[in-house]
Length: 323
Image (cartoon, rainbow, N blue to C red):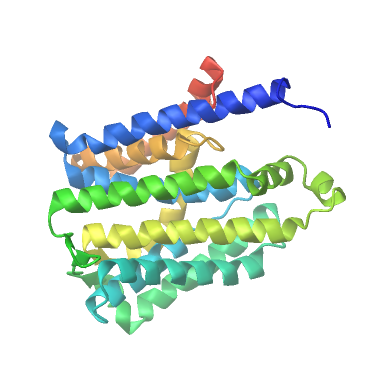
């Protein structure tokens, strides 16, 4: 058996992993000390929920190469189910979040079975159509209260003793969930399953010739992405204490594409950076009214023309590092 210890690819892989772990440690420390900096915790919690949503979307688009225009249906479905479970059924927060996440996983499986055999624009249009179908369902469904949404969702006690009504406790719970989900995504990307996804993205016909059932791999990636997007949606409604049609609207599917492309498609940390930038623009440019969308569009166009790999992608390319 030939040893691979001195193989250049092995050394590159070790450096890649060490770079990503080092950045993860820095990110974790930065998130832990946020309450000590005087930064508004709600803004960071909201940004972390969208960062998880963007990371889930990037898992599918960035590593399987398929563009979904319907990921808002997973974010919104988990939000509505979690909100209803917590407020009407009286579920504790951990069970409400799991119920919402499971609902998105099931929806992801059903949507994937319908759409996954198509590619390119056909796949994107099918997912958009399914998302619009879910939007009009939630608009008419009685339990969602239509345009009013579900308000006053109780935050409750996580595991019976963590009072989520306290902002500091809720903040650290959100940070813990985000970091654990981020590690899961990172592990998936760097697993043999993730390597197969990358090979399908680069050359699907070659992957088929090697004996891989590519539709099965793409379906698994789609369901994983939908599940993690659902986790983000369920967590978001616990933070915001309301679930509305905004989260299931088609514009939310476009917004997550913007986050991923802005930060860096196919990078590990790009979606996090993109999500924080988009949420920061919405937060601090709110006084500009409808001009916020115009400003976002201008920034997006400038970034696409200037940073074709995204912000994190360009930094990684400049320093020859994996981020």
